[in-house]
Image 1 (cartoon, helix red, strand yellow):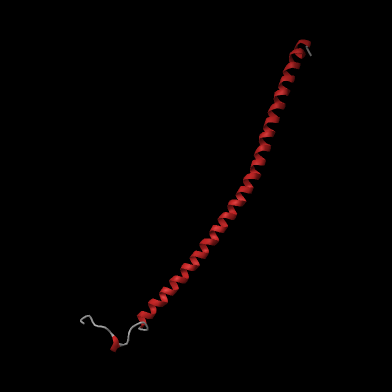
Image 2 (image 1 turned 135 degrees about the horizontal axis):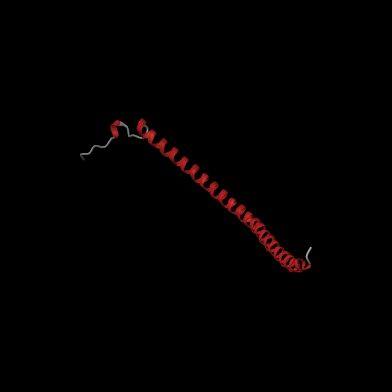
Length: 97
């Protein structure tokens, strides 16, 4: 091999190796930061999931309470339709007093 070509090749390899090492180092730091951020986001995701689950339980409780109220109202309406809630015929009030 030509000694002049080797003299030019040595600095090229040195600078190329240095920049390749710096790029690899930067990429590895970025990847590490992303992984650590992902773990923190995972913990935040778990907290958000627990908050949503608690909200869902609250909504279920409220819907069950509303269903009980609707049932009660339906029973009251059914009593008045069946005549249980009406006054006896002799005690009815008339419009003209």
